[in-house]
Amino acid sequence: MSRPPIASLKTSILLLLVASLLSTAGIFWSRQQDTEAHADLQRQQTALNAVHARQQQGQMEARLIAQHLDAYRALVARGFVGEENRLAWIEAVHLANRDARLYGLTYTLSPRTAAPPALAGGLPLKQTRMRVKMPLLVETDLPRFIDALHARAPGLFRVSRCHLARFTDAPPQPVNRPELDAECELLWFTVAADGKEVK
Image 1 (spheres, rainbow, N blue to C red):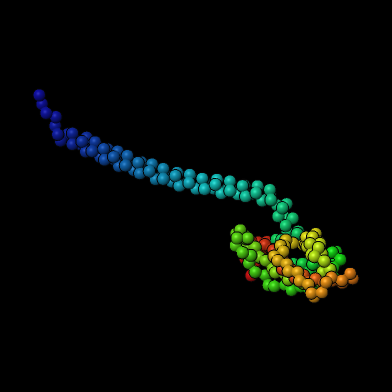
Image 2 (cartoon, rainbow, N blue to C red):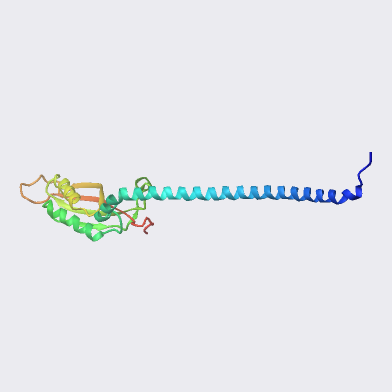
């Protein structure tokens, strides 16, 4: 048996080695490309999921806004949302005093302050204190005044406290003359329309 000539196979072996090296390099390169493509696909999928989540959040917020828009507009029209309307409050207490057929009043308004956090519930809720002082004929005049003010109020308010005192220690007289002095503290509430803190 004769041996094949190595010299004549040298070229074929060299070509086989080069082909093997190129095949190995091609396999390595294609795996690297596959890994990069898979990572890029994952990034794109994550971005797509984030876009879908934002879209769903936006749709949910739009439904929520549409659901509560009429209530919000009613609060704006009533004077609860937006800037404080001190002139309307002053007019309301005077008209309520007149509607309750009382004997006039005096008032003082304090600067607007932040409402207590427990009451605000995360809203930029502000409160303005109004002290109202008025003479009364009988104790039942005070609830009539507060009911009249609720009917006239251009915003939301709460009676913080009221104090009744007699002018004198003399017994009541059968004349139509006020003998009681009422002093009430009202808290008028407002929320900034844009959600920013109002100083």
